[in-house]
Length: 77
Image (spheres, helix red, strand yellow):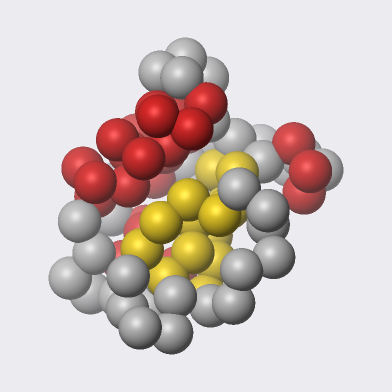
């Protein structure tokens, strides 16, 4: 979403908006809900405003998503 580099699905990290409306990192890649993919924390930072549209969640907290991605993979790319 952020860097727009084409990669294999397994090389990216899925961000999911669950049916209850919560947004989190999907470590398994198979959680139910609307998903968006980033390749790392730097990519998540570049995606900024795209999360709301991709996840169909206008009130999504961008900073919370970036923090969750950084916690999952570190703060590098």
